[in-house]
Length: 175
Ligand code: HEC
Image (cartoon, rainbow, N blue to C red; front, top):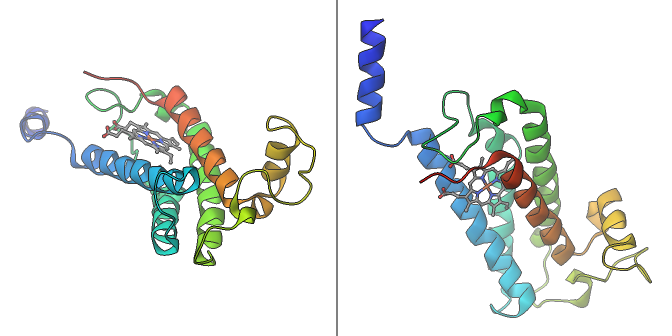
């Protein structure tokens, strides 16, 4: 018991948990990647197929099983921003991580074949079975049913929705 107590005191004195630090920097990388892609579609950044591919690859690598593995029991709760609820709702957390992983893989596969300049069919609002649908109506439904058919920009929006869903449920502000 005593040695256990000492060991945890040492960990506390050694500063932030490396698992927490690693996942926080992985999250920051995802945020930077998402911002890069969004910037290219918004026209704030020059479109660059190589950078698009790299950013989409980062999203793919950091989601799915990799994201799940970053939140082992014992690393949740303050001082980290990960809620303790993650452990009580593992299946929900993992489903979100896998869903965003599936979308990110689909986007990355599209980015692998990205043309040298941005094309209309990469943009929101293009794609099959979407004609006439409102933004909140048919389009998201069609993209959810078959993400591979959704334009890249739309996939990015779906990915960002998953970021927000997970954060509102499983992330907390810590001082
Ligand atoms: C399945 C859940 C989940 C998904 C999906 C998710 N996050 Fe997170 N994110 C978290 C949790 C939990 C934390 C708090 C981690 C901690 O502090 O230990 C976090 C923290 C962060 C942080 C703060 C990191 C820091 O420095 O403290 C950023 C930025 C972030 N996420 C961006 C994103 C972006 C961008 C996406 C989508 C591309 C995303 N996250 C998807 C759960 C998720």
